[in-house]
Image (cartoon, rainbow over all chains, first blue to last red; front, side):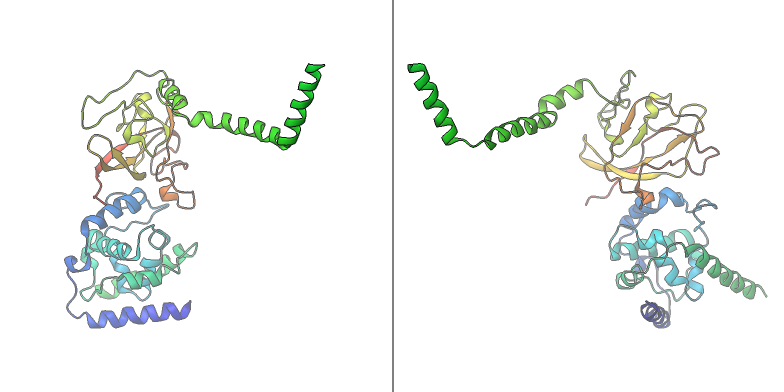
Length: 154
Length: 183
């Protein structure tokens, strides 16, 4: 499992290195209409139409979700959270849905060198879905994200 | 004497050509047949005329819109294809609004239903109305697309009164969110 993860992380880093000039939203999402419909059918019920969520049960994603792409492990986390990994859609549709979500709800934080999730990457990551450890992992990543933000301010 | 002979011949023939188990087969067939009666169209026609759920003594609420056919106070109204609960139409609200004094849950479960008028699927959000005790009228339990509780986001058996000031369930609505993409 660790080997798979490590290689996925490496692939992600290498990929980010190759995509030097960033990717437009149009290039990242092949079927925006379907991605939006999947968002409505599979995500919106709990995350709310504007992705603001509910603090006790469903963390907010609006203005936050793409920040995870800035810290190590964040890219993998986004594909392994239970709601994403177990969503009943194909790898290709899930990759599209995740890429669409990043641009739709947090375009401002999508890194300039962001390499969109591919079906193959999603297929690999979703095989190791997070369970009860998801909140702890999210808290750890948020600590890193906040540290990053403080570093930017100074 | 002749009757004796005829009876004997008949009895012997029956004994020779049939097995004792054939009687069990006959009885078994009759029982199975009786169980199949409810699935016959006759029985369904009767159930449609005398609904076991839906209706509930509430006057029909036709939409009056040919593009939105049916009776919103009846369980077989097209938008209720995946609902599980009391119809707000029967509880002082409508198919898309909550009864006075209740609060609509922003957290909801969402599915699709086929509109018989245009044969297209529509995305339907089953927002629960919360804050008053159960309405108790027009219980409607249709489960198209319903998934087990291990997929809570696609299960309608759980209480969706979440994100509201009260978690007490009153009734369910069926709000149209949009037209689903052609598959």
